[in-house]
Length: 174
Image (cartoon, rainbow, N blue to C red; front, side, top):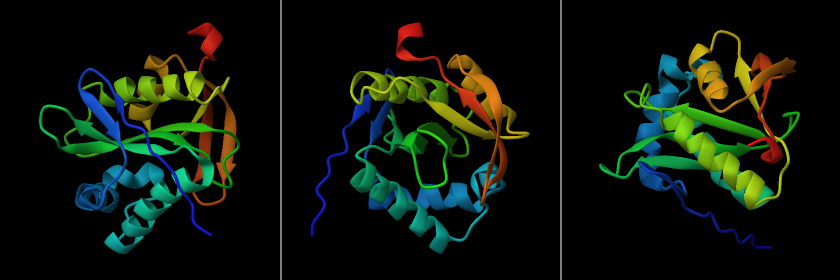
């Protein structure tokens, strides 16, 4: 059996949201090896990052949606991962973002998050989205607020532990 899938490219003012590629492994491994990955299961070894890269691509094949590599249009540099995620163990479809070192504070997560959410609502026909945010992850809380999301209730994930479910406004509210 073969699985065919197509990962669309989205474009914002400053970013491309594109399919992950093999050359994205190094910046991704740098992120997942650092303390910046503490809220998403890190730090981890390069071998575990390789598995994460495969899981990200596999999610597209299995679910028909997933997360994109964020690429700065001006530099061509991979600066993070943003997109739609619904692996086993998550309560609902999630909008998630991880920015690599040097990419924070520029509004990239908000810009790309808005594009991914628009895709979920306009192309996939979804009516709601959440973001799971670990306690103490004030950067992600700020992004969620800028996207109009609000904390709803706690959730405990078997691997990541306690998080807060942040509910995004539905398409009718945007």
